[in-house]
Image (cartoon, rainbow, N blue to C red; front, side, top):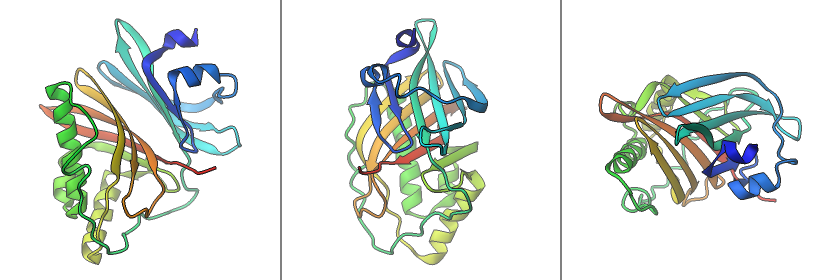
Length: 237
């Protein structure tokens, strides 16, 4: 039964950043059994939907989860499951260490072969967000995310659009440099006016651990906007 519910492109990221393919997930399904989620939130984006909320991880911690579902051949199938452990209290985003590193990946090159104009538009929007972050341009950054945008990152409290703008402005005032994650792997799927982007990334200055990210995009008034980003640090054994 579970096999029929999973897209062939399905991937699962646990709260430790471990990635499982569809085959690996099904093979280890008993050990990966999901705990009951409390008050999950369903959001529809046409041919793509998200279910998000909190569930208990196997080690007893409370993890935020984002499940991405897509409609394929008339049936809803899970495309991705992504977990992340957040902070218990307030935690501000790092201001950086002041070292400037030229952005080659993803600013100049990306390890991904574009398959459609829609994919190119999503990648262009992603690149605009990354460049705006580097330039401390909060106004430009805000043009490429939805009003309901949320960022979930390992070890931090959830961050909404206003809080992210404030963080960019603080970085500008402090004169600190921002380094964005280099793309190591990209999985991009477009479904009508929505898209899912699953990446593995690492910072060239190693200022944070490598991480896996799940991002959801929506097209509104002809423009692709990021509506949620979930980033899980990859923990080394």
